[in-house]
Length: 440
Ligand code: GLU
Image (cartoon, rainbow, N blue to C red; front, side, top):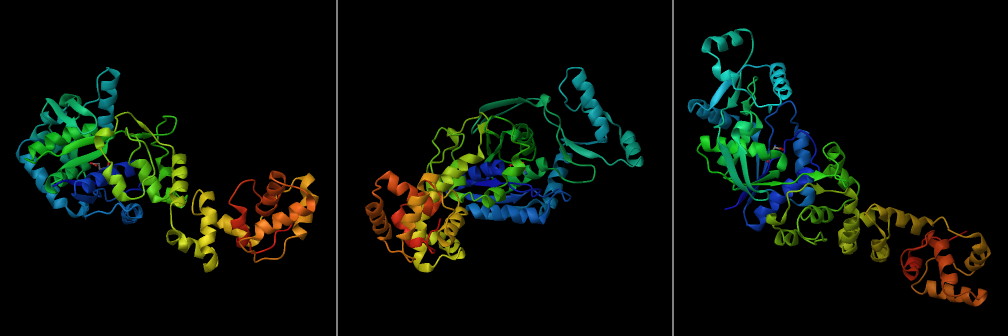
């Protein structure tokens, strides 16, 4: 039975980078008919906020990425303590007393000597008396997991065969001096106890995975399959980390990006499959294949979401937008036509407002100097609204007769005068929507 999890820390809003992780895990669970767990990694009481937890749920719900179960690490602290005791009993856990400043100094020294900044295990040499002396000084110990210095190997679902020398990695701190259980331990305990079969996360976690494999083994757990997806970069390949804050899912929602557009993009971006607009979750799930994703950094351009949003909107029936349209004040009997006329001419739903303003209040006419007289004359031949389906053809025929203009020279200036734009919907459809007679 496949079980996956998405494990955000509720310390901020979800962004496109997080979404990739959430989506992959969700898709895998859906495809296998398995379970998808939303796990809130909230062991940091200072940085975790209930409002972020709510926001995470809201954002996932917006996208329809629903979870079968929700778990909260802050309610499972006793499980982590138990695991820590087990590690301590097996001699794989040791107490350290270095301050952050001391650790920093050690790292700098190592780097100066051209050595990798790996923790030197000095604490292993401490006698009980020395430890007591530190405690008497007011220091509280933090706890590290003692890695076995051997190669840690796994076949990654995306990266292929991985082999990491444990000696090149610092023994991970699992419990801080203030007693706070850190992510590495909590995650391992949860993954093991919750029967997670596939762990999919960003490639910034590759080293974590190496250490977690040893911790899982030390705790006697079963190893899940691991896969690490590439990280997103900006369109030019620039690091996205600093800009991710502006790529929060709620900001995209605010900017009018449609869920299916976002999901269609993110479910295939960085894979060998083309990015196409999908119409349903089922379609996204069906074609999803983790092995088709590459390990190279993946370029993400927020602007790509808008053509997809436009195309998605073009597929929607009136029911899907009826509320938005009613909210603009469009009369119910004109909603169908309003949607037909505007859907191909909007990027996001918000653009509907502009079209309704144009139809209800009139556009600022776009009239070339040499057309002013022509338009003035044409307008005298247009009655007051309401306009029927044939209003446009009747009007243009009459204008043609009176002025001798035809073709583009006839239609274009009239379109520009009525809509203020050079291109747009079929004028025969536009006319019946006009609530006021156009003026110069
Ligand atoms: N809370 C961790 C993070 O957001 C979870 C990583 C993982 O999936 O194990 O990075």
